[in-house]
Every structure is written in C-alpha cells, then in structure tokens.
Amino acid sequence: MFRLDGKTAFVTGAGSGIGEATAHALAAAGAMVFVADRDEIGGERVTNAIRTAGGHAEYYTLDVTDRLHGDLDILVNNAGVGHVGTILQAAAADLDRLYAVNVRGVFNVSKAFISGMLARRRGSIVNIASIGGIVGIRDRLAYCTTKFAVVGLTKSMALDHAIDGVRVNCICPARVETPFVSARIKEYPDPEAAYREMTASQPVGRMGRPEEIAAAVVYLASDEATFITGSALIIDGGWSAGR
Image 1: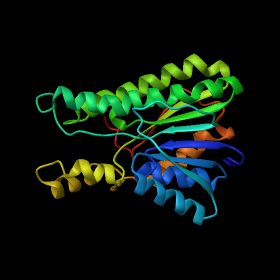
Image 2: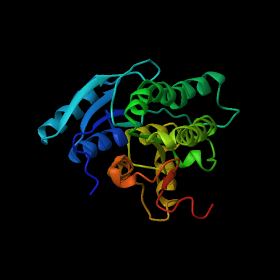
Image 3: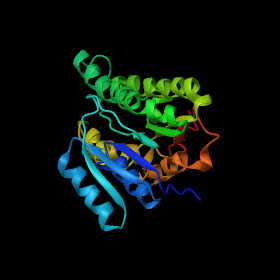
Image 4: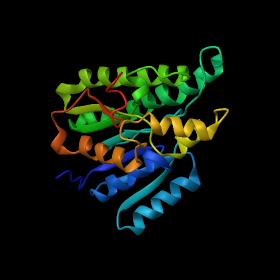
C-alpha cells in the first residue's frame, strides 16, 4: 500500500526538516523526487542521501517567489518562513515577507504545475500549512495570518478541481522538531524556557518528528487517498483537542 512507483514528485523547502523527511519518504515509496530548495548545500545533501539509499532524486534550485513550469504527479508545497510577535511587534515588512513565501509561494508553484495535472486528469497537491492555520496562536500574528490563507487556498483549489482528477489537501502540524522550529524558539527572550513550555504543552509530552508528517504526505499523495480532497489534516499530538 501507499506505493508511488512511476510517479514524479516535487518538494519545496526540501533541504531540511519536514521537507527533507518528505523527500526521503516519497523516494522510498518509489517516486522520482525533485528536491527543491534555495539552499544548495542542503538540497544537494538530501539529494545525495536519497541516491545513496537507492532512490531517485534530482536537486532543483528554487526560490518559491519565482515562476517555474513543468509536469508532475505530486507537488508538496512545504517551503515556509516564520515570525514571532504580536501585531504591535510585527512590521508590515514582516507580514509581506511571510506572505511572499507562505502564500504567494504556494500559489506560484501550484499555478506552475496544475495545468499539466489538469491536462492528464490526475495529480495530488499537498500543502504544508500549520495548526496555526486552524486556531490562533499567541505571538504568531503574521505566521497564523498566512497559514490560515494556505488552508483557504487549499480548500478553494480542491473544490475548483475535484471533478478534474486533481486533489488538493493540506497538513496542519503542531510543533515538530525541525531547524525551522528551533529558529523560532531562538527568537524568544528565554529559548530554553520556551522549548520546555512548547514540549510540555503537547498532550503526548513531546514535539512531533518530521518523519511523522512525511508519512501523511505519502498517504495523501497515493492512489489509496483518491477520495480525499479539500482536507486540512491535523497532526498535532492532541494539541488542538482541548481548544
């Protein structure tokens, strides 16, 4: 089950964290993976690791704010940036920066590839949103604003193209042990206290692992999930259950 043999996948932000784990998982399931990231060192490292493990991968230099085009079966919009702060602490430039990557980046890459999917009447797009796109989070105004937009974009695209054989879903993780989350924690006045609080706030007693998110991506990309579109899959260790 959940094999992706003969399929081509494109993963943005694949040079580390959830994107890296997703690229590995898709390749292990049989897909040819384009490892897309503007970080050449990270992207090449992930690509070489996939090849060493026997998978098929190519590195693709990508800034998601740019335009591109091509045909593929699976698109994973994972690239994202964050910001810590309230509306009083966030400048308009901060919101613009997050919007350019988190929202317009998803728009740009999806627009580049969806025409080919529609022409072949098959394809799966998985957007990595956030639990911050489902519920508000303190001190994350700009981030939550953009992730709520990603969830809305996902649902709208799914409805527009459900009859065309193209599925669009998003995953909404809570805190996952990634370089991205580590960077946000360092923005707090007391990073160690912030880490302890974030870990303790998870009902399961820990943060998630990138591989746990990647497994869900493989499922949503597979033919076993052909009745799933327009979903915002929450993977948060129970964090939102009491909210």
